[in-house]
Amino acid sequence: MKKSKFIFYFLTVLTIFSACTPSKTKQNNTAKKPNIIIIYLDDLGYGDVGVNGATAIKTPNMDMLANGGVRLTNGYSTSATCTPSRYALLTGIYPWRNKDAKILPGTAPLIIDTAQMTIPKMLKPAGYHTGIVGKWHLGLGDGKVDWNQRVSPGPNEVGFDYAYIMAATQDRVPTVYINNGHVDNLDPNDPIEIDYENNFDAQPTGKENPELCEMMWHHGHNNTIINGIPRIGFMKGGKAALWNDVDMADHFLAKAQAYVKEHKNEPFFLLYTMQQPHVPRTPHPRFVGVTDMGPRGDVIAEADWCLGEFIKTLEAEGLMENTLIIFSSDNGPVINDGYLDQAVERLGEHKPWGDFRGGKYSLFEAGTHIPFFVYWKGTIQPKVSDALVCQMDLLASLAALVGADQPDTDSQNVLDAFLGKSDKGREQLVIEATSRTAFRKGDWAMIPPYDGLPVLTSVNIETGNSSEYQLYNLKDDAGQLNNLAESNPEKLEEMKAAFQAIRSDANEGTEETIELL
Image 1 (spheres, rainbow, N blue to C red):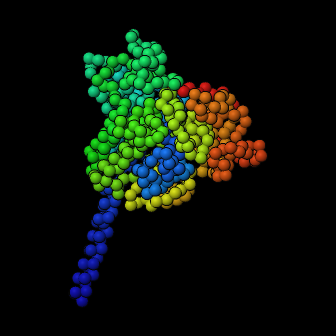
Image 2 (image 1 turned 135 degrees about the vertical axis):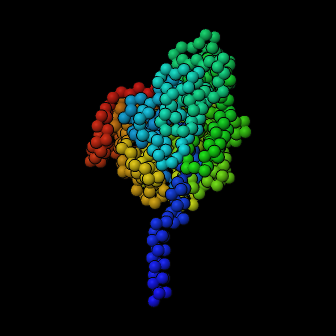
Image 3 (image 1 turned 90 degrees about the vertical axis):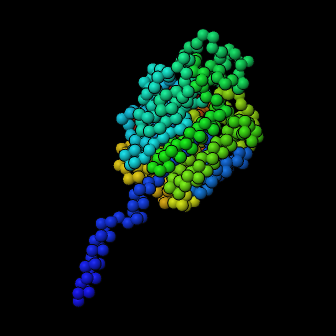
């Protein structure tokens, strides 16, 4: 009897102790939040990747992510140009809600309010260190930047603990790297001067001194010449801080690798924004000629190599099994975007837009329908998904992943679609191109009437502008060749009503000015 009582009391105490002590598995799950990496390319088209049909360019590392994770065939950016897409990605807000979320000059002020919620701001209270390496192009400072002092506000003020960026784009001045607000390697005795309206005395330009250009401009890129490349805008000084274009991919890769190594022992979020294949396309000599397509093909191959080297670093540091990798592009492809680099002449049979119509600057599918892969070794099972998702949804979905509060934005929690657990994404989406908007719902796409050029002749891309409503069934007509607006008035009215419920301020038929810089 005494023995039985002892066993009873022992088991009772053991049960209470076990209930009060977290299991080892529970402790590990709490301690090991997944690292989150977004790898964001610039102007990479849906059809530029092997898994989406490319054969002229080999992309084994992009293909590995796609084939080993969730390949989202209905993945979208919000906009057909870079600044608006990046704004929506970070804030979870439609870019057309912010009149300043458009292609920015290199001297534009920061367009993200410092009080606004962003992905890094959401992740920091959950214990994440946050970093960005690469292109920014969301504005810096207050619009009157002294590049010789700390430039603020910028990425650090909207949630990034570490920011190593270029100010705007590779084709715009200032052509310098910025390390946590400070121009990297700046000589104080050679101050930087920037002007987007007027040239400085005796500064050669692409327009007036073409003999000094190693890469010739086609349109819009004919101001200050740096490294033999004419840029947008005028720049003087800062010679020690100037980047070397052909080393840019290696430079950003090294910074991304160093960030991972430095923060491998804590949960981290890294936004790694490559510059390829945006103009000017300047492959390192190692990659010149690796494709038959000239610089545009070569820099895509270079970007794929960078991705592979970055993944090798994650593997070497033992991080792959606890790292969620999201791969995408800010908008669709453009071939001639300001420089004579043989991209048009050497395109051959390659179709950067895939089966879609349009491209960068366009309301047709190829403007915003982009490569979109989600990879998490050992957690995500390989899958091809047609769930409708948008980069804007990453804010809410990542909040759900880490247990943060859901933000009050346009972002939707479609985490299960991103992880391949569900085929259900969002039901509808407004897309944007140079301040014009269109609508996706289910298998259908609707473009309201807009005045303006139907084709941008300088880049040979259809804008989507028409004097009539356009309605397409994308399931049957991915190339948007058969306008069903007249033959299916009921569906058109349904789409118009749903669109206007979101965009109640939509001004259909208004002439739009599209400025290509």
